[in-house]
Amino acid sequence: MSSKHIADIRTEYRLAELDEKQTGSDPLLFFSRWFTEAEQAHVREVNAMTLATVDVHNQPHARIVLLKALDKSGFVFFSNYDSDKGHQLEAKSAAALVFFWPELERQVRIEGWVEKVSEAESDEYFQSRPEGSRIGAWASPQSRPISNRSEIEANYSKYAKQYGNNIPRPPFWGGFRVLPQRIEFWQGRSSRMHDRICFTLSNNGWNKVRLAP
Ligand SMILES: Cc1cc2nc3c(=O)[nH]c(=O)nc-3n(C[C@H](O)[C@H](O)[C@H](O)COP(=O)(O)O)c2cc1C
Image 1 (cartoon, rainbow, N blue to C red):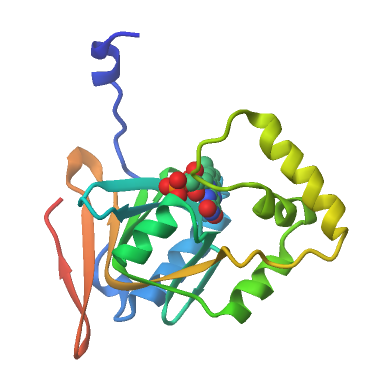
Image 2 (cartoon, protein in one colour; image 1 turned 135 degrees about the horizontal axis):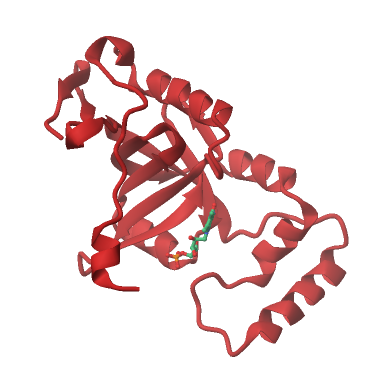
């Protein structure tokens, strides 16, 4: 595959437009609307989002996680608190999220601060997970080097035997909530003349501006 081939890959976006009136005054409400539309459009892995964090050397790191809850205060995902992302968020609570819903030619960017969700919220979600995932959380020292796959498979068998079907939440596993300070909605348009409506949180609430594409 040549670079020329890659350079020639492009899409013209023609599906929709976005204006200041549609987005209203509450970006979380508008996000819910776009999320529902993405579900209705059968976007695959609609709740998958890129999570960017920063380490103590200011090196950014990005990976996909799944949005598991959304409320007035923010966007919740679950992970291993002892993972690389967990340590990065412990040291620096700034984070960014990106959703890309190609079927709707839409992107949403969220930036803000991260806090851990309550133990009760983590327990409730953990117990709603399939049994295999609950055991998997115990079995995997996420982000740590392992000698081979058998190591975590042996862990898996050990914890499956130990806990049976009464699997507690590991103390090192739980939720994070991204408290948004900035939310930008992007709708692809033709000739790269895209629509971008951006909300920023101030003491007086959300301010809205249109950004050049
Ligand atoms: C579609 C998809 C969904 C994922 N969802 C999660 C998730 O919700 N939580 C999680 O910890 N990792 C999830 N992962 C794995 C992460 O991308 C990543 O590999 C892992 O969390 C380790 O990241 P870290 O070493 O930067 O901490 C998902 C990966 C993909 C591709």
